[in-house]
Structure formats: structure tokens, C-alpha cells
Amino acid sequence: MFRIFRSRVLSFPRPDFAEDFPDGFILVSDKGEIVDFGKWDKTKEIKYQQIIRQNNVIDFTDYVILPAFIDMHLHLPQFHLRGHYGVSLLDWLKEYIIPAENNLTTSEKNESFIKAFYQEMWRSGTTTALIFSSNSMKFTDQAFQVAKKLGFRTILGKVLSDNKYSSIKIPIESTEKSIRESIQLYEKWNGYDNLLYYAFSPRFGPATTEKLLKEVGEFCSKNSVYIHTHLAETIGEINLVKKLFPKYKTYTELYYKTGILTPKTIVAHAIHLKESEYKLLAKTHTKIAHCPSSNFFLHSGLANTQKMEDYGIEMGLGSDVGAGPSFSLFTIMRDAYYVRSTPPAQAFYYATLGAAKALGLDDRIGSFANGKDADFVVVKYPYWCTKDVSRTRLLSQLMFRGDDHLTIETYTRGRRVYQKTL
Ligand SMILES: [Zn+2]
Image (cartoon, rainbow, N blue to C red; front, side):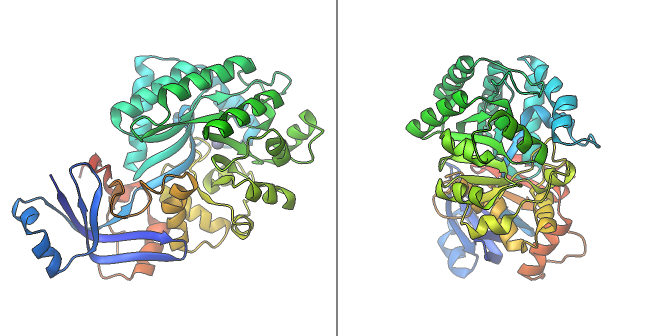
């Protein structure tokens, strides 16, 4: 069954340009792919008269359709830990995060917890996310099972930490077990239905050994697998890396020389970097998940996104839930503006196609194009913002005043996965 979604349609094909079809449409096939989209006019009415006659037109003309959002960095086990104020990164990990992650095993309770996590993203208009699980192989497997059952698109991985000399009290496993379990999960899930992917996920420098990083780098380069980790989020973390790995000049050099910086590596934060470190990230085509809300919350510092752009480093936006309090990419875009005056069209690009490109998924998602998956979000106009509002004004209003309350419906692969109850 083909369906026509009639609405104002916005898309962000370039960082400096937003496409706007005030009287627009998207035609979705029975496979959930976009078949046509753009401006609705008389020629379309004639061309698609059969679909109209069959009553397969969904009227969203009072609303706005945007490409669904992509969250480039967040933590599943921290879903319920948002908003605990007053701590910095390392204390926050110790006081809240590690005990919570240790409590996760497989159970029915966890299944509903995982389900609620994915549904919360759909409620915010996000249909794709790069996610840290916990150290537990069983819990990570369960997170994949639930994503499969729901049809949530994710790149997910079990957390790796094997450095027993680190002063942070985090769960430690042997290098061998960490790698073995990761490979098992990768073999079971990576590429499933073009929907689920595996990411080797070293927690961060101070939690890992060189041996582990080298093995991850080798396996992932050879097999073209995602690597997902944190980099230079706080000064305290950088000092720990210096102490644990004195032979490396910088934190980024530790990652570079152990081989984990690849075109399929995404590092979150990358705040406190020296010039040489930007160069290494650019040289290796590493991608960055910029997480401004989390950085404000933990007072970690302000990422230099201008520098990242100057070096041509591809990036997207991450909520970093639970350090970031909100799942809504509108909120993250707004905070990205407060870090640096990012124009709205550019912020929307980073939340959609920019992130899809950084993840290498832009052939399927991120914008409206024929043959791509119909992943989109229907939002209402913010109060006092009428339908005749200009494109520039609308983007600004959505970015500064938007949150998950604006979401009316969310679709992934043409399937409605969230509907607001009015
Ligand atoms: Zn994080």
C-alpha cells in the first residue's frame, strides 16, 4: 500500500541550506521507502490520483515533517539517572553510574526498561542512535533483542574496561573476555536487517589497557566495524590518561597509536584537545559526537566545533543521556548554539544528514531522497508561530522553543512508532 503524507516538508541536504516545501508531500511505498517527495501541485494530483482515490492520503497540512533525528551518543543503562546535580564526570561515574550498571542483568524488568528507553527516543523524534550498553554481555544481547522486536535502528555495543590499575572503581573484566564477548555479539547482530549494528565500545582511555585498544583496533580495521568511545571530556580524565600512559604525548595519541582511530570510529565530546590532536582525528577520518547538553550539565567545558569544522572532521550531535538530561535533539541543537552560534539550518543538518554521513548510513537515512527509508517526525508549530512563517523563522522557533512536546507522530521505515495522545 502506497501512502501520501501531505505536510510542510523540511529537509537539510547541506550544512548551509534547508529545503522547504510549504505545500509538500512524501510518497511512501509498502516497503517503507520514499518513492517521491517535494512540492505538491496539480501534476502530482493527476499522477497519484489512484492513491488519492484509495484514500491513502494522510493529512498533516497543519504540521511540519522533518527527517527523523539521529542521536550520535548516549548510554542505555543511564536512562533513569538523569538530573542528579552537583558532580563532575569522575565522581558522577563513581556515585551513580557504576552502581547502576552493575545492577543490570537480564530480567523481565530490564526488558521493559530497555523498551521504554527506545520508546522515549521515538517520542522525541529520534529513530537512530549510537548507544553504549553496560559491561554485561547478556544485558547487551537483550538490548539487541528488544531493538529487533521493536524495529529500532541502533549501533550498540558492550562496554569494554579491563584496566585494573585505574583508580576509578569501575567493573573490570579480562582483556580476553572483553574481546571474546564483543566478537560474539558482533557476529550475532552486526548488520541484522540493515537495522542493527555492533560497535566495539571501550569506555574511555583510563578504563582500558593498550592491549585491549590494540586488539579492538586490529579487529575493527580488518572487518570494518564501528568503534565508539569517549575522548578528552574533562581535564581530570586527561590527567588520568597522562598518569596511566606516560609514553604518549596526548590522549588522542594513545588512541591513534593503538589503532582505534578509523573512519568508523566515533569519539564523544573531544573538548580539551591540542592542535596536534585535531590533526590526528582529521587524518584518520575519525568522527565526533558533540554533546553540548551533557557538557553543560557536568561543567566539562565547551567543545571547539569551529576547529572541528576547520579541520573537516565530520560530526553529529549526541544527547549523552544520562549526563545529558534530555532525549530531544531540539534541546541539544539549542545547547550547541549556546556553545557557539551555530545557525539553525546547520544545527538541523548535524541532527539529521550530517550524523547519517558521519555514521556511514546516509544511503538509508538522514534526509528525504527517493529510495531512502521513510524515517521522519511530524511536529506541530510552536505557539504563536503560524503556518505562513518563513523557513528561517520556523527553524529558529523550533530550535529555541522545541522539545519532545512538539512531536505528533514518529515514523521509521514508513511505520508509525509513536503517536501523541491528545
Ligand atoms: Zn557518554
